[in-house]
Image (tube, rainbow, N blue to C red):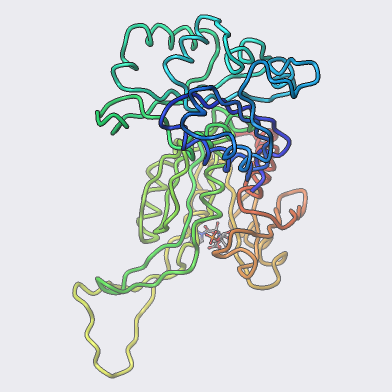
Length: 398
Ligand code: PMT
């Protein structure tokens, strides 16, 4: 997953207990390809040492306005000069007060004032400090100055109290940062999509399913949300976390998946079928557990509705994207499905490449032919699929 390759992020860490979570945020950002430069305030350094951030970021950590390591002694200017984003996490009430009032008595507050890039702050403080009128004024001023506020969350606090003021978790902050960097190709659009397997019940404990993990579908849901879309994700049984900002509807069987899709399809500009929907289901599901008889047993299967074909056949359908999972002759079968289901775009993949794994190899089929994408992580591929989709959508009269 390289979502932030080439991006320079300054991570300001101030003196709150949540500073330890910023170590994980650093790791996530670096893993995604960002170049992370940590600026620790004096208070921040009391909670986590510079060594931790240096080891995780691979860069020297900055703590001092008068740091002589910068040749021109102007760390406050040079550090933020080519930065794409400054994020302060955790942001104490103190640093927010400084920023709201243009004060600059340490390296972090000074480089924020001297910056030429957006600033995000993730507040972390006791609930009474958060609710104090002075903090409310500072928050309002920061928002008016164009600073993006990430959180805070509500819940149990380090001081033992419960309320608003907890810093957002590192993965949520990471999502918000990724979101910020993505082009908003799908702004204003609603995407309804399916992901994961279906489970077709035989009796209360048994059923027919498949090994779709949901990773491809969830990556695509996340990429659509990052691209600015409202995303309604109808999901079969998977253990994936819900992507930030995505509306998730859990279902089990193909019939439930179809009902959930049909309940939302009128809102959709785009429909994407990533789910590995069972083509057949048992004619009837036994009310009680079927007992072993020692004899051969026959289960009659009946066809399930084809959700994608049904959506595509509606009057004024949304822009439909299908997936095709094959084990051979990908071009023939995937393009065949595109024609048969009458959808403008199909993403084809071989099950041996992508089913259950973190990576995939996909080929996009549309009216202009086939467009193979290089092997990659599912998130990176999802972004490429969304980019392709938005290009077609721009030319497609909805
Ligand atoms: O979940 P992962 O482990 O990450 O794996 C990803 C994946 C391999 C499941 C995914 O990339 C993929 O290929 N999904 C489609 C799987 C599939 O069922 O393909 P299909 O060729 O059988 O179906 C074609 C299309 O019709 C699909 O868009 C499918 O969602 C849709 N369909 C199929 C049957 C049915 N009854 N209703 C449908 O809507």
